[in-house]
Length: 421
Figure 1 (cartoon, helix red, strand yellow):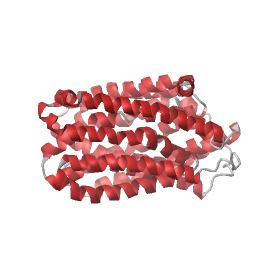
Figure 2 (cartoon, rainbow, N blue to C red):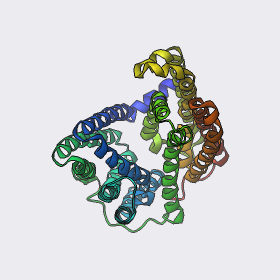
Figure 3 (cartoon, one colour):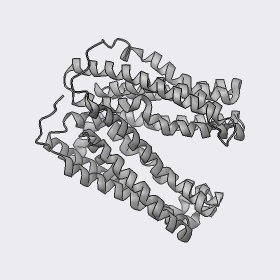
């Protein structure tokens, strides 16, 4: 238990408690924001806006061509302050430019493409202005992480969501759905203004020598990996609706998966806090192996506790949503078991793969899992219904987790020099 105690103490010393609190607060504030929008906008107009926003969400990992993701990995393995500053200047210069072009392309598509849902094109074009400020916010947050300022990272998250609530309330009340969209665009602009000191004084330094095609590929595959991960979680809902042609079953699956998938914020909190720390020491074999053992011990205990609790109280839990949901307890338990594959393995080893520069492996694993998901659900959903989707999801969450673990130990070469950077 000393290993576990030291791990938690280290997490707290790196301001992990602030990150944890900010994550919980952000989720609560996001829920309040959604509730306010529901009160101020009609279901029809809000649905049209959210449809356009869902498209933006899938494009968001590609802001700056993913350079913000390259920034955190290469910034962590770069030990000289001048090189970190030179890297920041390069990422800002190129990232703003590529984000602008993404906005231009999405804006033109919004005007040209004939979407079936009314107003989607107009809303998409307006939303396209969010890419540049969102990229700058990500860079500001990553800089805080690189300099071990996780407390500031937590403040940025809370301020962002507090501003979003205020702006959504005011602008949606005055301008309705257009105001709602403007609120999402102006929130990151205000955040950038508040924390502008993080980037405004960045010196114009020469491009670091380690920036090459691999640097750009890392960011691009990071974006692909994030999109693939979102698809992996979203595809069950799409296939249930398509294969069963029953909107009620879609609603049931969405709610019985709500609790299992919500617990996945926990590994994100720890990785957000620790990614820079373990990337800086990625070639230190003893440190990395101790980190792996500590992480897996903690999340194995949490997983067993989580599954046990909701197995015992499965009927009571589902009854909180709707009494009819209690007939889906098997699917609920299966999903709870499935997310443990992410808690114990994927959350850790997927990021360790990114840390050693093998982020494309994450994309390949997730992409293959999506293919299996489609084929498996095509046969299991018609015969087993929601349980078929739950079995597929649970199996693939363990598959991606274990695959990430195997891939990491295959590629990990701790005897290599600390960095060529």
